[in-house]
Length: 139
Ligand code: AMP
Image 1 (cartoon, rainbow, N blue to C red):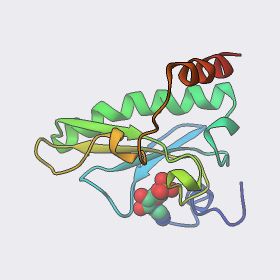
Image 2: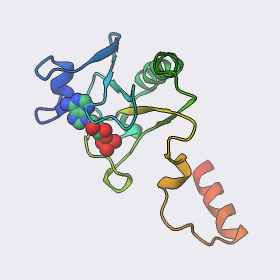
Image 3: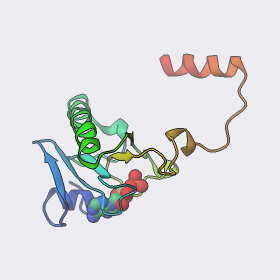
């Protein structure tokens, strides 16, 4: 629990939310400013700011809720697909510093964009540079 965290306040019941799913460790509620009908946020109840702060159990619980809810949300709103994603860190657009997975229903011809659109200018990388990055991550 973090004193200034709006999502912790939702977990504690101090701020209202349209809850759609709850377990001992995970809460899901509708986004207050939806990008689409059914836009849902799935959060760990325990405060964690970044994806890398989640322990294995919490990460597993969170993703289990996401996999259960994504088709359910799509079905309820009659969506043709969904973007599922996390803004991890301010540079990536994270505004609420409590990990949350966005489930954004998508409809044919809705004018939206794929996740590929979130990146900045594409880097011009040599094969050697790509290999070095792969090796460093794999280490
Ligand atoms: P992000 O930019 O990934 O941090 O997204 C934060 C999301 O939280 C935005 O889509 C907001 O509309 C949503 N949000 C902020 N406050 C609330 C709230 N009290 N209840 C539901 N959703 C909220």
